[in-house]
Image 1 (cartoon, rainbow, N blue to C red):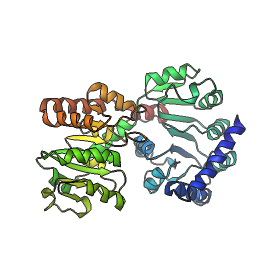
Image 2: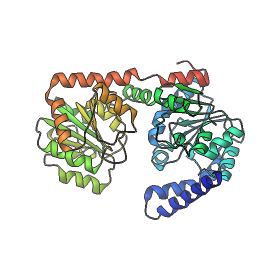
Image 3: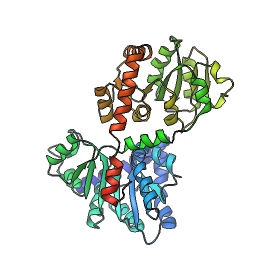
Image 4: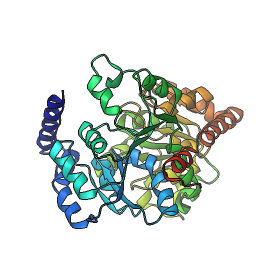
Length: 411
């Protein structure tokens, strides 16, 4: 099985390189992989001693960020190595000041793994939520380097729990300890003989709490929103935008802030063609004139998590594609959140629905029904707002538990 696994990783590497001829993301990954060992040879401390934290992508980084920053605050001499596998994480956070070294994670091939660990000599390794690379986990275990996973969540359909998943079950046993999100994950792991686990919840809730406490003041957005009911569409995709703009065009009693997931010019123009009411892009607006517009299009990155504070109701995109984006970023501001049908893998979505702070929709008609009820029924809106905020606040605290157990840090 090990040979098959390594062959599969090798083939994946070649396919990524081939895809890079046309795909920008694949090309960035291939280019980034080429420079890893040169970067580490030049910048890594020859003595090593790094706390290695691996986040697959940007979402996992945001989950792990409270942990990184609390460690640095309490133990500033700790050397942190931060790795990403996806360009969507590395390209956005390659200049993050909280880590001493930041690079892509080399493909999980035996030679890469040994070279990477030889150069960095980590004292501990922490994986955020996902990523179960067999060669890395086997070699970390062989070198007696304590290895952990935090904010992990497991589902019955994963290969670990299948009859043919023996090789991957053995990989899980390389973890020194697993810090998991819920009881269902504990039961699944227990069913395959893994009991070195602790249920601590999801560090993402601590991160969105930090975001709320440090949210940017955005005078232009505040001027736009003043005294109005605001529907915020965050991380939207074209399918989301079709029915959101249709609803907005026929509801003069609301304003719309639309923050698309992609902000290239052709996409922004396609959004503008859908709108029948006055709209302006954020980078073209001024405080003196923005109130005269009904839609504000956010055509830059880095603002959405602060913009949610100005909303009445939020719609978070991605649910008609690969999966919803970060709904906790909106709910932390006591805002009810609407999202599409592809939310099965997201525990927080199911729990927000159950508590009355989140609403799943399957089509434009359902969106209109839910939005109308929230925007026209003050008592219903107040209840949904409270439910959303309470859900986030009661699920915070995972970071404190992990800090205490792994590092002896008491916040």
